[in-house]
Amino acid sequence: MKRIHYSWVILILTFFSIIVAGIIRSSSGVFIVPFENEYGWDRSIISLAFAVSLFLYGLSGPFMAALIEVLGLKKMMVLGMSTLLAGICLTFFMEHEWQLMLIWGMIIGLGSGVFLTVLSPYVANRWFEKRRGLAVGILTASTATGQLILLPALAIIIENYSFKWALGLIVFLSLIMLLMILFFMKNTPKEVGLLPYGTEEEIKEEAAVQKKNPIGMAFRSLNEAVRVKEFWLLAGSFFICGLSTNGLIGTHFISYCISFGLPVVMAASLLSFMGIFDLIGTTLSGWLSDRFDNRWLLFWYYGLRGASLVLLPFALKEGTITLLILFSVFYGLDWIATVPPTISISRQVFGVEKSGIVYGWIFASHQAGAAVAAYGGGLIFKVFNSYTWAFFLAGIFCLLGSLFVILIKRKKAVSIVENGAVSP
Image (cartoon, helix red, strand yellow):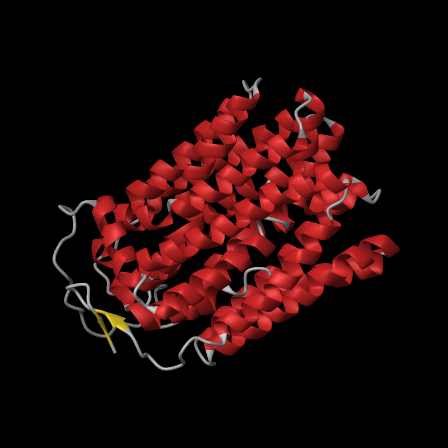
């Protein structure tokens, strides 16, 4: 019997690590109302803390990529999971708004940065030569798989017991995942005497980067990338992606459903239902990104997502579960299907070695959009006592994003060379 390549073990381990980190981040949606009821805090303040978290974990992306190069994959994953575990534990002792900002805004935001920004493309680039698109699709889909499995469970625990019991479940899962990383994670295929999956001959490695400054590496990559038009088009479209996904849907969808009289468990179940189809859609998107023009994939993803967001308020107003299930299926297939093609284009434009850090900056733009939507959604609710305008505007922005991506050149027209110059 043929032995399974250890790259697939790394893929599975990374998949479950991202699941745990993803459920910690996406759990903010089920904690808004409990925090509001428990502490009497204004919803816009709670939304601001979650917005800071989204922004910080996105902004940390390029620095996380550089730190992985310097410290190694395993150390960074251990550090990230330990930070998330500490943040959840500190939540038990939270009493003031500034503590919410510190714990959920900064600690959990930075802890999420390792897993939810550049980890997927880094693992795919370093451990896979063949099936890279598929690997990215599977790993990207894992953020939704966490909410698929756990959001309804968290909602049931909160409704029947307390949000602190839900936090306890997250602590347990984080601890298990930390131990799995410590025992089984490896930095490179070389550590287990293998080549990346699909590689037939050893690739000459570049000079060691351990002595380089990660902050300097991150900013040098940014300085080089901003000279390339494709960087701005990818960053702009990804800003809209973040605004229309984890910033708005991930943070405010449950609260929006509750405002129309839907029970919290049903709202969380609809969100997790999206996770089922996101797992399918994003994995399929990774497969498609290996075979078709990534620009047109993105064009359709953004256009269809925009249409679904514009129609959501009408579905909620009608109040029929059939329409809401259809929305969950349609939106779920498209939730983060944009990520594999975006990573693929980034790799084509900037090269395998530099694309990790450059994608980190592109993802920072994604999370800036998410932060705008997370805080803006809470602010719009405070002013209008409704989220409708937030969802309608997000849909319009998605249609704009579909125009951005079609302007990207199809061929490998640009590259960044070592001295920092941009060449055709």
